[in-house]
Image (cartoon, rainbow, N blue to C red):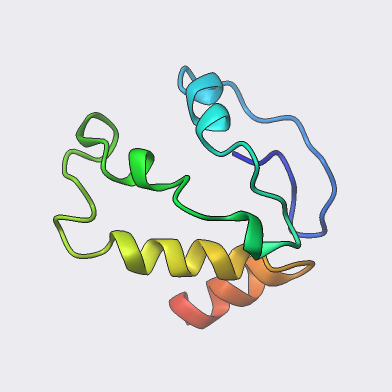
Length: 87
């Protein structure tokens, strides 16, 4: 939703009816600068209409935030996080 790939290059998001809403909620987050991420994911991860459950109430919202923070750390960070958590 940041429209930036794992190398930090911009790309066009695929069409999605929630694009406008979600990109607005993520405003201010900069790839290669995890310090710009604060609580922007909270309204998304707690949205029952998106996930069917509040992910914070389910006990995984904070973990997802930590993984997201790792994924915006810089070039190659998405691939590294996926290897770390899925391998």
